Length: 152
Image 1 (cartoon, rainbow, N blue to C red):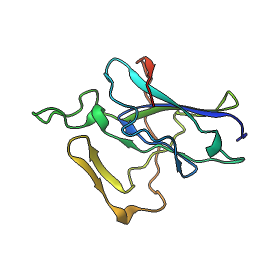
Image 2: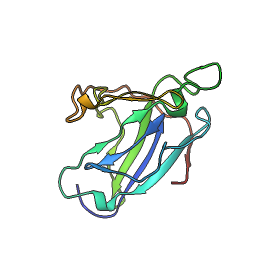
Image 3: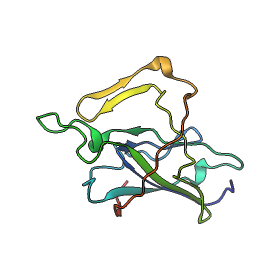
Image 4: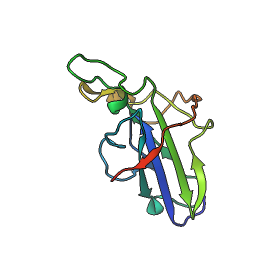
């Protein structure tokens, strides 16, 4: 991958934290933020220039339920805006897309975060720390919701 000016454009149905080459991208907590998930998707832009290096780079994006799927309200209802999680991103270097969310992405559920919920908290199993395993293909859907830039 060429090293130059680099930007990561990203949003999610659910919560995300992006890691590029083992370094957390940005410091936003509960990204992409609170928005009306059946009307639009809130998106962020990060300058990731200092995180890229020549050759192969690794982008990891753990997802969580967030407002999208978490327990909500006094009745404990779930899936306020949908019943699946998803991420939409584009990594650009020198203005050219070098990595995009598409059907070639891989996913795993074998990581230390076993469960998370906006009201019920997180279950973390430190025994599962280390190299991620159990990678598999993903299901892709077309995004019909408009993207709205949100503050970092």
